Image (cartoon, rainbow, N blue to C red):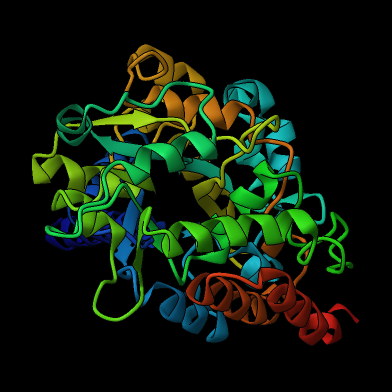
Length: 410
């Protein structure tokens, strides 16, 4: 009987260990580029998913902002990528990602995909296939210093204002003695964000099929945009940043040295901490033309070779659900229902972000149209910098950029 008891106990122990092993094996790896508060929120979302899925462990891997792409590429190269990851660089990684269109169609009712604006979904598509579900986003706006406007007696920006209006206001803040300006022009802007100004002036970097630069990147409208910013710097309507020791327009704004800042949600927390009393205005329009904004998203993607593909999709669905989206901070909710329930679409600080999103769904950024865009962008960036720092001759610089980039279109 004693031996029988030992055999029974041993069998039960083996069964328990086997069950534990089975549960322990279902580990879902999720890679993020965030840290601090944003990371803590993501870990809380992962915990909620675990609670709803007993036996599942979500391993949140924080790769850090600067090293994110390097670590992600290393994982794919070694055949050991995370199951789920934050993604923005779809041209580089899409061949290693799982297309989500069939899954989205299958779960359309549960996903309530119409609750997510089309402009956000377009930002994760390559060749008509969707490789990521939006989890957070930002558009671009103008932050302005209310105290500086009041002190200078300058009327605050209104909806429907133009770049001519901004320039007229900016000129009134120029003060050589204390080096204050109305605005700041970046000599080395991110070409991704900068394309919003071309869209708003009726052009773009490259044709929709990704095969033609001539007549787009070097169009009259593109040159007008560059010449405008160059003139603002030349006329000292704006400080010029990314030249010499002055590298951050955001720092100038937080320090009360510029009255207006073109920026996005990633600027907001720092401005809040600075104590500057600010308002948020719409991006200015080029006269008679509709404004469009660049859209930056944090998307959730699944590795094509994910070890837990079904579980990965369940996690992506939960992570982009209204419940999880409502938990997030530091970017904007991708679900209209969440934004409305939190009062953000009517809040004067957030409303411009959402309003411009609603009209920024016609254009796709250049890097999603041509897989060699990174090489083309190097030539474009040099042209933008030269046009702004030399404060003129934009057409010649853009013509040269197009000429040097033709080989990447073949």
